[in-house]
Image (cartoon, rainbow, N blue to C red; front, side, top):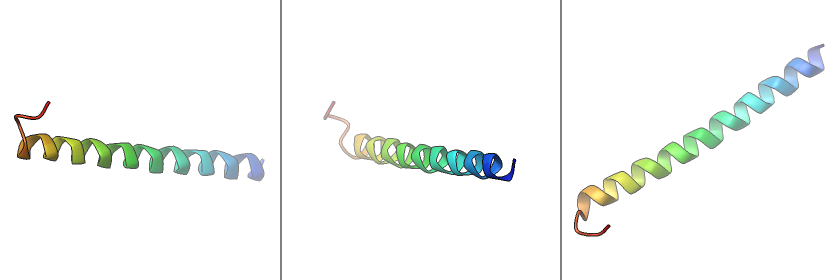
Length: 40
């Protein structure tokens, strides 16, 4: 029971860190597009 709970928490943490990485990437691309609007 406890082990299954720990696995679930670890999976959630991994998903969250992956989501944050993707979010940072999108923000970087978005700010880059604002600086250089002529580049598609």
